[in-house]
Amino acid sequence: MENATVEKAIEKKTKPFVKLGYSKLETAELVTVMNELLANYSVHYQKLRNFHWNVKGPDFFDIHEKFEDQYNKAKVAIDDIAERIRVFGQTPLSTMKDYLEVAVIKESDTNLPAMDMVAEILNDYTILLEHMFNTVEMAIEHGDSGTEDMVKGFIKEMEKDHWMFTAFSSKQ
Image (tube, rainbow, N blue to C red):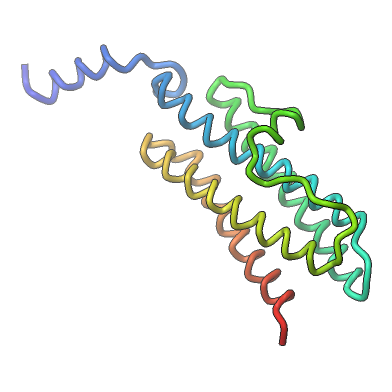
């Protein structure tokens, strides 16, 4: 038997296929990072809704509308991540209790000044981007191009939003 053929035979015996050609361990690792991203995105989404409803001050119209744009983007991303987890035959986290236990992003007070709300969102973006990069790294490690492609799209959008919120909040 050739070396490559032997290696493939050994790999087949040691890598039980569960779903889409990923082992149980690979599936668990991919789903774990996606659930962490999902939890953080979900807390971020609720924070955006809170801020959208409760922002006050001279920048109200600009920020109110922008927060709505952001929570609509987050809603789509949350749905995409949860559905991607389902593709792997797993159940995504789906309760606020679970999200709050897993997420690094925390809930925020309702009565913040508008620019403090923007600062909170910028901080959330940093946390979300870190989780996105971790998810992409895990996807690359396991050859999961579907997850990699999906999350890279999120990264591109969020980096642009980060830039815009940073420009808006910077002192002239």
